[in-house]
Length: 252
Ligand SMILES: NC(=O)c1ccc[n+]([C@@H]2O[C@H](COP(=O)([O-])OP(=O)(O)OC[C@H]3O[C@@H](n4cnc5c(N)ncnc54)[C@H](O)[C@@H]3O)[C@@H](O)[C@H]2O)c1
Image 1 (cartoon, helix red, strand yellow):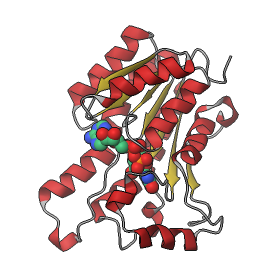
Image 2 (cartoon, helix red, strand yellow; image 1 turned 60 degrees about the vertical axis):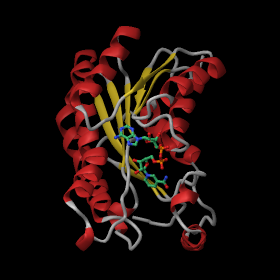
Image 3 (tube, rainbow, N blue to C red; image 1 turned 90 degrees about the vertical axis):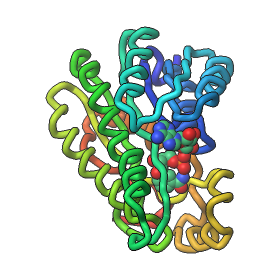
């Protein structure tokens, strides 16, 4: 019996190399049934298969772009068909397009805002009626330290969306607390994964390490631990908060 046995979790963007998959695996490792949702056409299915095999739980994959309301609704329907309930939603999907603001076109701005911010809205809108009926639920939204720090390397749309996620988290937490639903955010510093080394130069990682009191880059698993804590009974009196997981890169 794991800490999340009997619970059902929906994790978006859960088929990549980073935080989403680490969260899905960690929840499954603690006994949760998991919906592995991701915009990728094939990987959510293969990752779900691996998860069920490795952790001996039910895991189902679905291709779902969080920008698309219909696809998000289909994701929720799948969870209800398979389990009849949803206890945990992790809004992990997020992308950055680091273009200087004066060169950013409308498409880039809209893409980044839609994936990071509207995606979380779409998923909360679709999942909350289920959680309200259950009188119970946990939602964790992925923000970022850049919501506080800004930064030269990040796109303005990404920083705005991640700050927006923190406000959105507080707004939803205020609306659904009376139904026994906790809504929190996690703000990672750097969660290193091999994919990132293809889009960032080596100096970026050295600089983050230098600025981090704990002296190393974070890992997807570091972030997953924080997400699991916020989904656990140990965090039952925490809502509307944002947990910064950055090794001290940013402190507040
Ligand atoms: N990695 C970091 O250092 C870091 C730092 C701060 C915040 N974050 C935030 O943490 C979250 C996870 O980031 P990660 O880097 O660990 O990546 P990840 O591996 O968790 O996510 C990548 C996956 O996202 C999927 N995806 C992309 N667009 C999507 C969409 N529209 N709908 C559904 N899925 C989509 C991709 O197919 C890919 O599989 C993001 O919200 C990110 O902004 C990450």
